[in-house]
Length: 329
Image 1 (tube, helix red, strand yellow):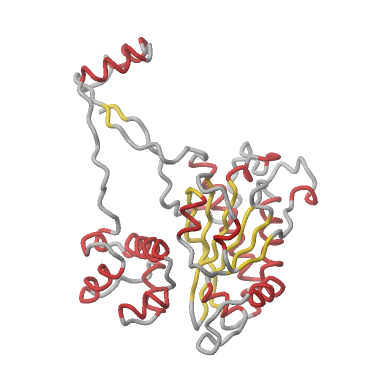
Image 2 (cartoon, rainbow, N blue to C red):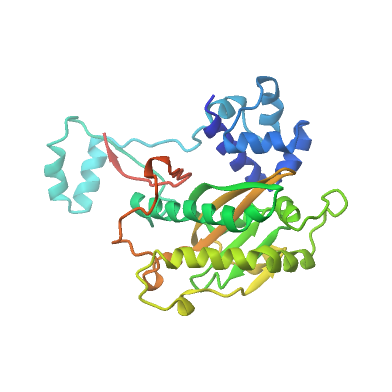
């Protein structure tokens, strides 16, 4: 069993169901720290708990062991005649010539579902991941360092998905902050459990989220975090515009993310950080309107040096980024 792959799958299925680590832990009779440990890839569930965990997450035990869900979409293979007909219809004379160079004399095409536009290449995604690795270091020193109960923050994933997929994965009530998202901006979502920890609230006494909680969290942490985030990204731009024009102001502070009306089918880039305390752990999701990275040359893609003290130690786990290609076999 690959602890990292299994942990990523557990996190994906849990967020898809819209439940917290604590709620999942209660359903399978373990501690929320155990769930957090699994999702971080620091350990695997015991074999004896796999059946009830699989049932709760609505998957099978084999998927948990392998760390991936079985493919449900059958791949259709075209015959050589169908390939030739497609090439003829598209006027692909040059492609016909190229086919003669293939080792397989009877090439076939596997048809994939083009669900994910290829918005970023691998180098661009690595650069984004590297920026957030550095941001985690800065947050650990300047924000987390002032709280002994906060153990650390780290980058979990960089992900491409639709707004609808992201919003549906969230609890009905959560800490949500929009920074002019619809106008090439971004949004922050803080796991309710870790948000309560930041507010130093007793989760047992004050389990409910209120708008006052969201406002207080913004004043205490979110405002500083968003400034730190934007400054870090701005340092990696070509600075063709001033920071004042580049930065986004808070336009919405809510505990009901589904009420903000994002365009469901538009793509977003989602960066997920994990914040851990001695009482609980949870995710911080940073949702970028995909145009954010292309407006005003936000990321200077021609600057290809990865600013990292030790590139080999940097963790770039790019998850669930589907690049569907037409493949000749």
